[in-house]
Image (cartoon, rainbow, N blue to C red; front, top):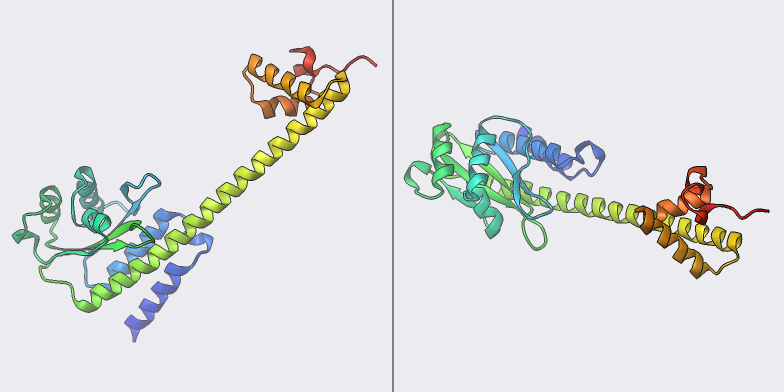
Length: 245
């Protein structure tokens, strides 16, 4: 019963979208920790793809797993890289009898591990990463461990996709707000200039744009200066000076 409780706790923690595990490195550490405790392995690590689609070591804890992951990433060749690109699990019961992935194989055997099982972290389209499981004794991973590993990976994939979608939406929202504030400021500045100098809004905008280019300033910065009626800006160009009353 204790194992069932731990599995349930892992599923709850890995699906929680609160801020405690909002950082992907911390989430990867949590995922690797549950994998190493719940599965029949001696070490676990997580690789995640960045915005550019390239894999990188996501877990933050230094140690043997980090050395092994870096050896795999350095040549972009190994079981986790294979699982990531193919979307299928890759397993080797005994690396001593397998000739693939020579740099990864050499480092892994030197650090005392002989068995490896890599599972892709799925998402719509292409995996977002891979989980690496290592064992010191040779032998295949059991069917039960394989299915549980796939379940952990599926939960992680859904969580990461959801968090990235939320982050992307928040970023777009902030960008839209910034653009809107800038647009409002520019419109206010156009109105102020048009009223001061008795010109059209189009002419006011052209003056602002010319001033911004001449002084190598952002248009929204010039607009803010006009709205705030900055004395320093008034010394730079007649554009921002109020007309005499």
